[in-house]
Structures are given as C-alpha cells and as structure tokens.
Image (cartoon, rainbow, N blue to C red; front, side, top):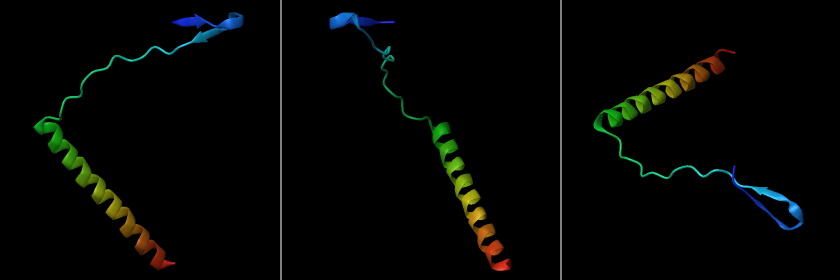
Length: 59
C-alpha cells in the first residue's frame, strides 16, 4: 500500500486509485432490455398503487 511519512514520523496511507476507462454505449439488445425492464417496473408500481387504493377503500 502506498504511504508517505509526514513530520513527526506519522504515516499517511493513500487508497489505490482504480484504472480509468472510457464507457461504451449500450448495444441495441441492451437498449431493448432497458426499455422492457422500465415497462415492467412501471407496471409493478402501477399495480402496487392500485392495490393500495383498493385496500384503503375496503376498511
């Protein structure tokens, strides 16, 4: 682990920095999967809200 010695003999540790890389844009298949997951999430949230509304009217 990289460290330096400061005045008074104190050690100062530094974290190892991760390697930097350039992100690649998503492929057509990944884009389609993101859209499908988004639709599934919207349907799930809509269903939960619907159940909550009906459950609150019962009591």
